[in-house]
Length: 251
Image (cartoon, rainbow, N blue to C red):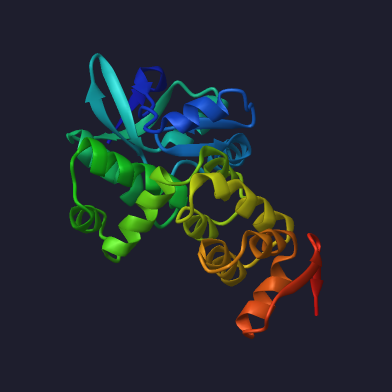
């Protein structure tokens, strides 16, 4: 471990263009690699380091005349906040794929990626490194192909507005994974209903089932978006749903 000048350390390049497009004008966050970081967390870490010191060095690799950060972006920005010129670092030799793997694995316990952030790493592995679902699961040491497939759905089938909602904590990634299974034109309406009515994952799952059901009329699907819990309850109990007008169910 050595101390290296912070000014020589470049951030890991942003993997996802959606981040670049949607977060350029948001002053409360910064975009790093596959991470959206709240600047308040930088302030909190800076105070912790000032009080207790730095427990773990950052991890970098050589890049040109300087270095590229692999693990420790938050620590780097906290040190800059404290006007430090140097930071303790461990220099390793890894290729691009290994570096991206470390984006997930090095901080999995202390600062795990959000599911949408994991999704962008998975997409990058599949599309740019030509890895299969099984290979991704083995590389990342996760449960299996289903885990990888769900992440890939979030990255490739979910519209950008909902991806940003996940990052901002407005909708759960688990519910968003269900939304990703329907056509893009129906996703915003589902997301709006789930957020407005604060539906649980189970309720979201049932609502998506209703929207995907080809045997149900468009009117019932409209009612489900307007009054989801009533329609879900009646469907779950196998009750016949009738209506007097667009926004009124018959009981």
